[in-house]
Length: 637
Figure (spheres, rainbow, N blue to C red):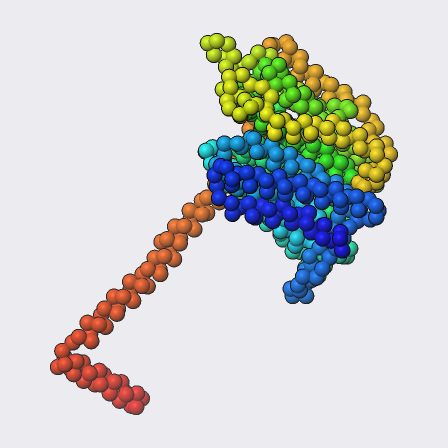
């Protein structure tokens, strides 16, 4: 009973405080402080609740569950439930830690934002929705959390109305993920209708026919591709960088993109029964891994480099799922949450310090921002898979699982396992290349912002009063401490793979974690070394120039936005124009013409009623005469 109440409070507290925060009036002073209190308190209480639930789950040695009947619809039972084992609670822990860091960081980052109150409330709603996805024991509850996240992402990406690209980016994210969500909804409906219940445990235990199961899982993968920014529905994520940087940290690290991966983990017993679904997932993951990594190499916008890296790293997670290792996927999800949140929050500190997102206008920040610099070193090292940082262990686990799957014995076809392994292996070198380039361009060499008196910086923080200064330096305390806290798991979380309790929670039954590391380490050294050599050989020249004619192709994300525009957006707009014309000139014209004709006919009858009495008598006589003739003719025949 206690576990049930604590489980309900886990998503319930941030959701409730988020709803309360939405009704707060805008403005500084009291409303702002109240909004900050609600935002931080919601994440902190959810974190405390998660720790208690994790302790209870560990002591019991079994998942915590609580279910209650809600209603029946056409013979289908809908329940309200909570279900979370230790693995789910580790994911919830990551969500709460990142959300708390984002809320604290945002107090200073958005210190002059007049719309801070709705922002903080929407972040709370976003957090609660992700926690609902993680812990719901019912597919309907999971779907509700899924949809609330979509709405919150739209609001948060478009939060800064001063940026002309923000509304377009928010609309693009909403529409692209909606495309996938249509399939996701249909897939869930198919599973529920066949099982006769929406309770997740019963859905997983139900015996589906092969065709029904494969169709439902492929529909679910459409939603996963949308939410987790996987090929071909990944194009919204780089543009979502128009949102505030803390929102980027939340979306990329602990919510939204992680939701799709976690849904596959929760329904994995069904995926194991469908080699076709796993093969589709493997192809999707392989393309995404290389697409994201290669696109990240040519970006000048700091946040877009990190965004494309997220696309690639989520591909590692879906690839691990495709080759039969949900444990490896969960492990990489947790380490990625740590180092990607760290990188985005540190990027926010850099952007606020120099007033630009562009690497071409940075340089020389290492001496001015030492804390931020070392945070980037740890975060980028973990992203590249540098031992002994967290990303090294989780990425090696994915590569090991893929290598084992190439031997056969897994539900996924061997050719699909080879595809995942080769793409993930090649991306190791590419990731090391662009991570090294980012570090060198932002923090080393001379400043590329020059004025008449030397380096010119547009904006910086005054630690005492948050006012702009002439020289950049590390951010103030409320921004600095979340960054420092996140460096700990980014550096050390990988070592948890050797903790028996953690391994057991994730069901990591492979005792050879980290084997066969020679080839990945060789590729990592080659990628990082090549970027450094290009930097050293041509000082002041961006290493990306070595890409030559491939640079525009990579920078555009292989022109897939253009392809989607030609194949989908333009036809959709043409159809919309055609429907509009048909509606205005056919439907509206018919309705308006009917009204006009009726009005004119009524006028004619009105005129007829105003005929003089003698004229009316003549008309009546003529009418009677006509009727008499007709009757006589009828009798005669």
